[in-house]
Length: 92
Image (cartoon, rainbow, N blue to C red; front, side, top):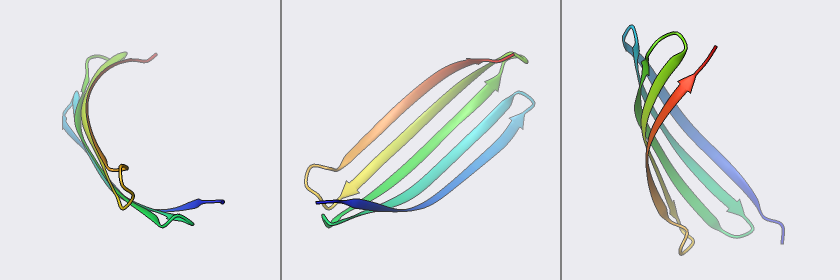
């Protein structure tokens, strides 16, 4: 049986330059996935909060917290994921 998915998404994002070298990030999204043929319906909530520190013109440090939560009408498909991320970036 062929199953397809339809996704509706409502994202939002804010970027605020706090100081010359500090950037704050706030992201959120709500997604609704409907899987035709199976009756499965998923509601996903995404949230991210973080900051970027521009160390110099070649390096930056990025810290993020990401929450990903899915509620489904299908048993065993619900989950919640919490991620703390620390990245160091280099550019030329």
